[in-house]
Length: 103
Image (cartoon, rainbow, N blue to C red):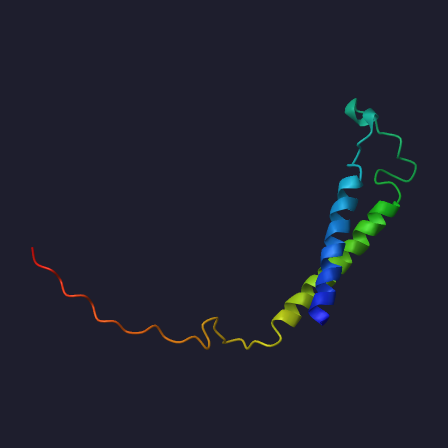
């Protein structure tokens, strides 16, 4: 139940993170930057202020990392370090090789 809840949050945050990153402008994306101008967003330095999209990106990244670590811990909780994926599988039946045919 808990893994499904965290997985749902994880997938939702992934989708929001993709959308928010794609909506942001690149660094110096103004038309003035094409001709060597500094651009119009230099009132607070070259980086500018932290916009709502950059804050949402930061929080989505933090939540993404927390849910990733949580899912990793929860998925490995029931397994021991030395366990194998073949644990509990039956060994294949031993078969005798077919006799070679002479021509």
